[in-house]
Length: 415
Image (cartoon, rainbow, N blue to C red; front, side, top):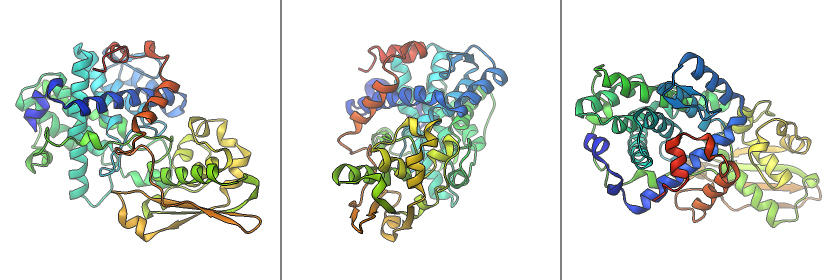
């Protein structure tokens, strides 16, 4: 694994994985620029600029500057601010919002080229995902993404800093030891700005690498000791990363997609709906069901996205921000949405995330969807289309807001 972290070159990465990583960076840029409307992102950027002041790296929120760890933190919070960022089924979380902010910050610090940035991102994704799988295998508690994403962030930083083996080992060891053990299900059932701890994963990863550069030592990383990345460089986990069509918890996406399909394929008018039954897996049933008052409550909701989708035939960023939360039609429908757990869907999780939606009308008729999976899974033929639609909407005219290394990529560094 250490040889992979330190020695990977862009030419070592298979062409299909290069394309996937390039698209994931475009997705990151799109969701980050979209997330600048959130209070979460504003607070994080102000915190980084004041408490982690410096001139090493760019704050994507407003173009300000901060130290490399500070920028990594703020940009990690920003990328996850709408819960619109990429994820991986088996780690049940968000690798990109941990890895890319760390890589961007250290790439600015070191003056890296776009190609070097992309290579470090490839390193970070592979280590983060394997660390997440390993952590979930040996721990009974469900940890937020920062708990394992910190190792991917540290690996990306170690690659860009051109470490030797000892420094790289200490970077991963420090990141694993100090990573946030964040109980994410608390933030799912009681939504707040805590979310998936992606900012802290990026912050810890960069801080660990900078400490290791100055000789700060660490005990051995369990990830390294257990040989959990023995196939790294042969099997590319980043190829299994999904992207999000909707700005909300991934566990809501099957029901949202099913609702949109029902509305499009049937003669469905919101005023006729008397009852909506969502059948889904047990973990999704934990998501908050109250009327959302904040953007986090709207994102970590199952009933709100379904109500909006049935009311308007869409669910997008404006529906999780003010004034969209006051939408009277969606709020009226929300009270009619019921959640049921399907044992078959629960047994298929996390490899598959399934839901059905049944809509009962006032005249006694009902319509039901087929079992539906979330769009944007790694094998979805529309995967790239989802990324490009997000990029066109949120980022196509915002290159000047980006760090030089990312701007150069957007202007033609995709090869």
